[in-house]
Length: 119
Image 1 (tube, rainbow, N blue to C red):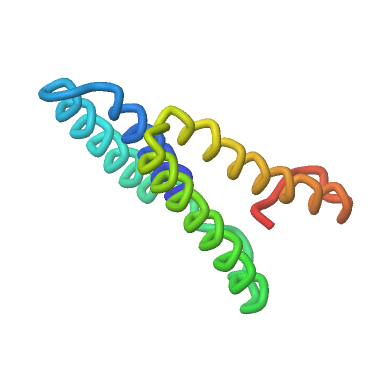
Image 2: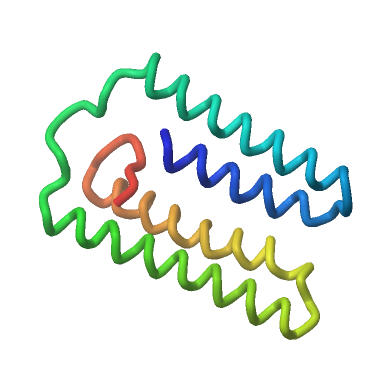
């Protein structure tokens, strides 16, 4: 839950880049407040994770994939900004996310699981 809330905050903050001045400041503060509220509510009302922690090899793979994804997003943002094409950042980042979840869906399909998982 926490990861998804922070992911939503990241997209919210990206969306605020379309505004300037006080409007942007208000939107950033609202986004951070909503994120904090959701994190606190999730901690209070949702049950803990079910099951055992990931085995070390799966956890390492999970971290590698998400680290690579994060690095790729940073590279996209820097290259697009320096090339003077910041409008390309959201669609290119969406492609990175899409490939990430497509891989997850394919793994779930191959293993016979009916629902997708992170890995």
